[in-house]
Length: 313
Image 1 (spheres, rainbow, N blue to C red):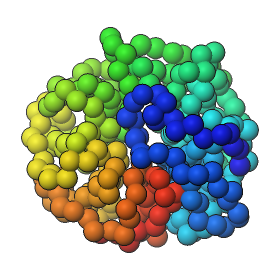
Image 2: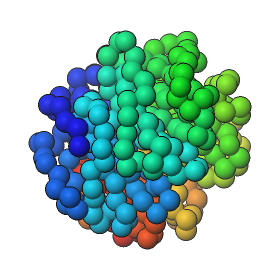
Image 3: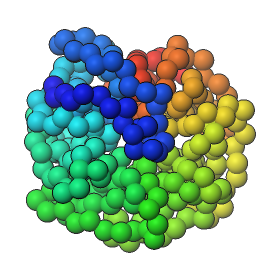
């Protein structure tokens, strides 16, 4: 495991991206122990789970989050995003200090693949389209992509302002979606080569677009705002929610139940494909940065409390 001194990085960057309520104290992680440190993202890789977080932490679990082992890495910056190609071997992790890490053995070992000259640049999410094509996004319209598995990376400007680009997602037909600050919603139908704006239902920050099928999307963001579209973002309808906490993560389970989570104990569940939400009374009281459905059907919440296994709602 790789460590540096924690810095409260969300506050230091002056932004609310995958925002939590602060860093937990540094903690050593013994093999198989439940991680009690800030974890910011994760991915299901075949029958295993890989999670990343503060101080260059990369963890692996082969039993749906019940126990964890540290992966070998050479990084020390906070890691904010991780994604794997469909081959379940090639993966990428990104984070602060303009850092991109790569693995070719399903997350067991990681190497530094790219690092920008400006160490103030911070990546916030990454999406592996296949073993060759990867996109990474971040603060102040940071956008980087590779078409050769990371041998070379190209930085581009895809928006005309300096808004933070918060999260990438991919629909069932391959359409890419990007959510960001100040009503930034984008769509790409050509694997990120070009991007078009999606009309935003409000001008505040979005933290993700969850594609439910070819046409149905749910966008989520600040103050518990939720919007649903059935025409691929051409029009939106608000989803009533009386919990005004920021929503940072969303997940569609194999059962088609949809769950949302974020700050201030915000846990919501939808059993009608995102048309309405209700409180999800799960035993978790800390902020959540990411949700995963584990191989055994549980829900794994990553965030302030590390990794918490919850029964499916």
